[in-house]
Length: 204
Length: 232
Image (cartoon, rainbow over all chains, first blue to last red):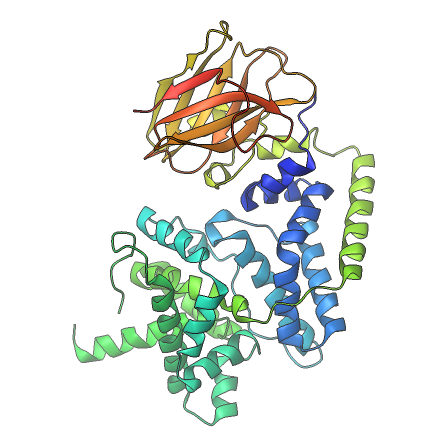
């Protein structure tokens, strides 16, 4: 008997195993992969481009680039979901600005991110991936408007820090500082409830 | 640390945050990457910050993608897969792709059916591992096996296993605090040997079991264990 996974077995695969099959061009695995991540991907594209037709095109392009292995997943980069959504985000920003100029990118495959994480950090990262959307929205809503605004302009708008500084008429240092403070607050909120031994030492 | 040093260090952290958000223009990003290469503190800070960025998409209103997007996408993918199958350089079995990338063996909830290259993981340099022998049930007198524990999770290698029926599969279970949870599925070769990943941490586990289950696996054992690896 040839070892072939049933549909049920595919659905039970973890994201990372599923990706190895997608990399090996298994269309059934790709289908499961799309069903798992297509919704959040389309929603993110829609949030960025603000229009259903373009969101659809962006999502399709992003998933096809994954299927054609022009984008390859490396587990060290983070969860499959985060990686796939990073690709969608970059494509969506590109689509928005194709006519204008190249937009700054999320770095999805830099060496630094790929370096092995110490075990304690890894545990915490895993725990954070399970965080709910509610908690994240709460974290965002707790941010001062000025911090949340620069984060949204950068991530969902694809603007560089200098463009944001210009738009808001604030010094560059101020904008970067707001990005950092905002992200640190989100990160700290996400880490709450994780036991201290899992948490890395303070960085601040 | 002088005030001057601290403020320059602080500015770097500001750049790292902008970089994590994808808000550095290419020239600035290149410069920062150069700094990161030589600065473990900033690299660690970047890794710490990243989950906050990775989760930003979750704050977005969740929409149902149009069904035609799925149809179009899956249609294209199936067509390309058929075309690739017709070409000669196709890999022999795509299950070979599962053969032991160490990082993937750690994912939770995995189902692995494993081909030939099982020795690979055992020879990863610089990692400690231990081997525990399995006990076979009386109903499987020829069976033998061992669990290689490595970095918390494990690889089960078996031989002399009874043949499986057409619609059967071997399932690996992890027993912990009296509860038995499904781990992975595997089949055996014609020579009755096989391997299975046992992903996730085995640190607090009591035993690893193997049963014969209907194809697709079960959520709890439906047959008596054929094999048992006692962990403590």
